[in-house]
Amino acid sequence: LVLAQPDWVDTPGIYQFTASMTAAVYDDGGAVLGDDGDILAAFGTDGNVRGISTMLDGIGPTAGLIIHAITIRSNAGGDEISFQYYDASEDIVLDIEEGYTFVINDLVGDLFEPHILNIGSGGGENEPDWVDTPGAYEFTASMTASVNDEDGSVLGDDGDMLAAFDTDGNV
Image 1: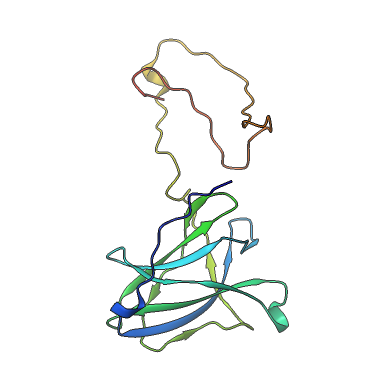
Image 2: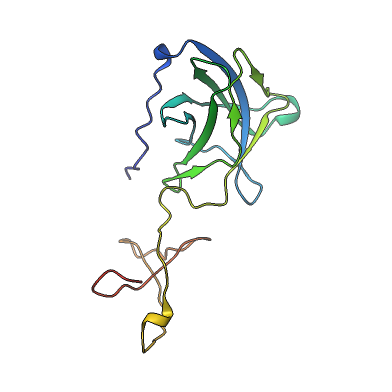
């Protein structure tokens, strides 16, 4: 199975200053994220990657948690930084609710008390922008369906959607 991992590239040599963040990333159900292949990345308002995390095992009071250590880069204090999280098991990029205002040489969180980051309420870059307009049609029908992959396994997780489209691509 080949995943569509994002093509984020960290270019530390083009930034003069750094800040260090040690964070735990939580999903909307309160579970800590951090499976093989997952990536936490920091971005400037220009969309450039400002840092990519490495995963560490928590110690002491955070034993059992996956912690993300990330060096965030900038050429000036005050830059607004946003975060995205690539969840390899779901093959999706998710937005992080919290942002960060860059402070030169800042230390945010540590292995004992990590900074908390939460997955945002949006569905990430793979969420469809479908709009259902039931009033646009004279007739309706309903259908109960099962969606299976090529191996016959039934697909469907919280947040998954199935939609019907007309020949013009309308929902």
